[in-house]
Figure 1 (cartoon, rainbow, N blue to C red):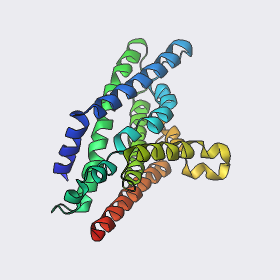
Figure 2: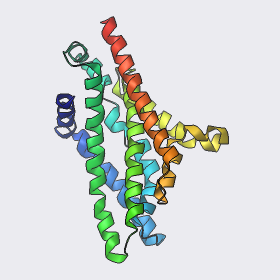
Figure 3: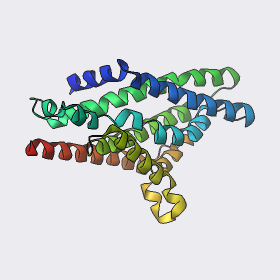
Figure 4: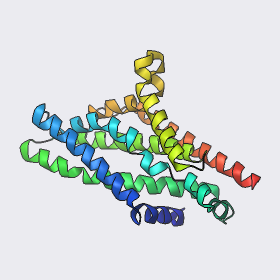
Amino acid sequence: MWTVMKKELKTYFLSPIGYVFIGLFLAMFSIIFYITTVYQGAITYQYVFFYSVMYIVVFIIPLLTMRMFSEERKTGTEQLLITSPRSMVAITLGKFLAAMVVIVITEILTLIYFAIICYFKTPDIPTVFTTMFGFLILSMAYISLGMFISSLTENQIIAGISTIAIFVLTWLAPNISSNLMAISLIDKFYPFATGVFPITETISLLSITVMFVVLTMIVMKRRKLVK
């Protein structure tokens, strides 16, 4: 698992993918930080996260997930991957953890804005850390979903577009019908930004993460049997 994770991290940072992701993440965060603090006067770190999270996870996270398995199939390295002595569990978790490391690095870099806010106002530390934790487990759920979609196709562009489409659908689902509130992952994040630690939402996001990681393993194991 750790070998796969290291290999994936090298792929992210020896290519533009990791830097583009971090750059776009911080650029979008900076724009929303400027708007919320200068124009709206909301000098709170969690307020910025509250309004930026939906755009970041929906449109940026697919950059990390779209090539996870689809690129392996396209380049022919999937055959080496599924016939290697490593278990499919180790391979899947290695790829998943590598993407999460990129997320954690990026989230740590957002503390620059937290430092700026601290200069003007004493922040609510518990709420800040609750918000960061909420974003982390929300990202886990989105990465697991994007990874699953990537395992279904050999074209990373199709994987990326499909992932964004599904993310947007889950985001807008509550606007279509209140009965679809349960499939909106972003709505499960909002309580964290208020400083509340919601047990139900935490369990729900972690369960979704586990479900799609397991589904990815099943897809890859079936492909291994076919090979």
